[in-house]
Structure formats: C-alpha cells, structure tokens
Length: 380
Ligand code: HEM
Image 1 (cartoon, rainbow, N blue to C red):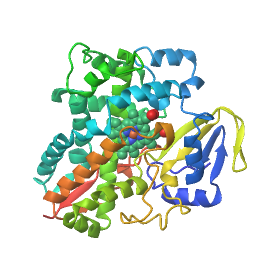
Image 2 (spheres, helix red, strand yellow; image 1 turned 30 degrees about the vertical axis):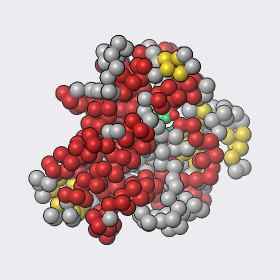
Image 3 (tube, protein in one colour; image 1 turned 90 degrees about the vertical axis):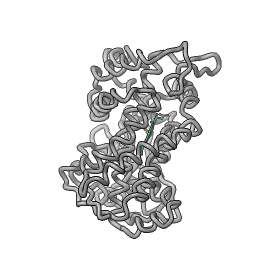
Image 4 (spheres, helix red, strand yellow; image 1 turned 90 degrees about the horizontal axis):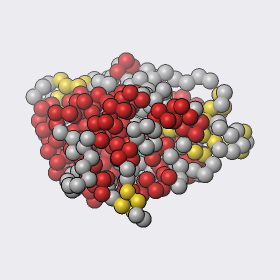
C-alpha cells in the first residue's frame, strides 16, 4: 500500500482514501480513515486494545518494566482505570490552571527574545522551549536540567512506534527516583504523585517515574507542534491574526481549529482482540489498527469545507486528543500553553510573515505532524 513519506502533506492522500478505500488492509495492519469508524474503535477498549506489550516477547516486557511501570497510554482496564484515577488527582485542570501566571511569564520572556531579531526560527525560540520549561517547572526539575530532559524526551519521542529505547528510559527513571521524597510535601507534580491515595492504594516509585516520563514524552513534542502549526495556519490568513489582536477572546477557537486542521498527533494504534469485521472488511485477532486522527478531523461527513482553516466554523469538535478512556490527560495544559503563547505573541508582535517551510523541515515521523524549523520575519 502507498503511504506518503514524511516529506509530503498527508491530507490529499487521506481525502482520496476516505472516498475510495476508507478501511484498507496491508499485511496484518488495517488502516482506517473515516471519523465514525475511528471513534467506534477508540470507544471499544474491550475489543480493541492499547496493551501492545501483550504481543511482545516476555524478555522485552521484563526489560521495559524493570524500572518503570507500563504507562497508562499502553494499558487496558482494570489497571488503566486504577492508575489513571490516581495520577488524575495530581494533574487536575485546577492544578494545571494554577500555573497560568508562570506559563505567561515564560511565554512573555520568550516573545521578548524573539522580538530582538528580524528573522527567527519560532520552533527553536518559542514552540520548543515553552512546553519544556512548563512541564519541568510543574515536575519540580531545576532549570539546569531542562536541556537534559529535552534531550531524553526527544530520544523517546523518536522511538515511538519503533524499537523501545530502554537505555534512555532507565536513565530517566533513575533521575526521577532521586526526586521522589515521600517525607516532605512540595508544590510540584512529583510530590503530589507521592502522596495521592485512592481506596488505600498509593503509587509506587516505578509508577511515579513511569508517569513523569510519560508526561514529558506525551506532552512536549505534541504541544511544540500545536504552537508551530498554529502560527503557520494563522500566517496563511493574516486577517485572523488582525482579528486576534482586536479580540483575543477568539484565540481559544483558533487553538481548536489548529488541533482539527493540522492535528499534532496524526495517528494512533490499537490491536484487535477478536475476529470481527468493520464495514464489511474482515479484522482478525492481533491485527494492528492504524487510526488516522488527522483524517477523521477532515472528514467531509462531519465538517463543511474541511480543507479550510476556519476558526469561526460551527462544528468545532475534533478528536485530536483521542476519544474514550485514553482521552489526553494533558489536553487542558496543551490548550492553556497554546492560548498563552498566541496571547503573548499578539500583544507584542503586530505583524509577521512565515517563510514557506521546505519538505526537509517537516518532522520525520509517521505519527506527528509538525516542523523542525519554521522561520518568522517580524514586521513590527
Ligand atoms: C497538542 C498537544 C497534545 C496532543 C495533540 C495530544 C494527543 C493525545 C492523544 C491523541 C492521546 C490518546 C492516544 C490514544 O488513545 O492512543 C493522548 C493521551 C495522553 N496524553 Fe496527550 N496530547 C497533547 C498534549 C499532552 C500534554 C501537554 C500532556 C501532559 C503533560 C499529555 C499527556 C497525555 C497522557 C498522560 C495521555 C494518556 C492518557 C491515557 O492513556 O489514559 N498530552 N494525547
């Protein structure tokens, strides 16, 4: 089956697949492109599992789980429910919102820095450092270690969907172990994770290290891409930017439309626990299902003119953060960071231009949509 390389925009291909081959098999993988089919699979965790380690050899499972518990992203209930309930207590929208002032200060400083130059790479100067600084601050990591964390989380993000990077996982786990201090309550996520308790159960050191690693890997590159993709999308219609300057309350809609239009996570995966069929296409036990969220978010059965970036559209709902029991736990944080980034940018920069990114600057990933570099010319 033809799959576009990372250097190409995938959206025309999705459109063709939605119309001609909305569910297609290649080997033991089944690819899905329609919104309804994808939502159905994501909602049915009993038959379509996230627990891929069940398919791995026990040697690999032992290696992966020596220092950290498996992350909630790759667990099914009941363990998923138990762990998600515990970690959710340390990562509530209220706790996340309490970081608004700190996030604004970080974003404001970054934008001040950007304004010192006529031409800047906003990936390097804004979209990347903001989420790293924010999550590091939330976890209680000292500033001197931010770049180390960034290096580790990049390595793990690159290994997503490929061979697990055990060495980096071990290094990160050791780092987080030494931050766990169950005797003192501190104002950070690791400290909160150490004390949460539900039905007499607490998180182990392995659970805490595993979840901290997940926050970095699931949160950094995704939010970086959201901010970059949003600036690119706005730059294609600067009337939107002028409207933002006049009326910043529309920024939340611009964030949602970016999530739909250039979804930072283009696909996710499940495996089938049963022999079944989906819209007449047979699916066998242990088949991999590749679910194109980025295609579901442009499905013409759901959206009018899906190929237009329109923050004012009536139907704003999308599945960029997934659906069902694995719905992104960090969605409120990603939304907050993206909103604040644009609020600060639009307060301080009146007009800008984005240089068309070259195909070589696209991320080399079949899961993420974003850019390594995106150059902004500041006019004012
Ligand atoms: C724009 C930014 C983000 C996008 C597009 C995104 C997307 C997603 C998606 C699609 C899933 C579900 C995957 C699946 O069902 O297979 C997910 C899960 C998750 N995300 Fe995010 N994410 C973003 C930011 C974040 C942030 C900032 C954090 C935390 C700091 C985070 C933490 C998580 C966690 C912990 C899960 C697993 C939830 C579970 O399995 O129950 N994400 N994310």
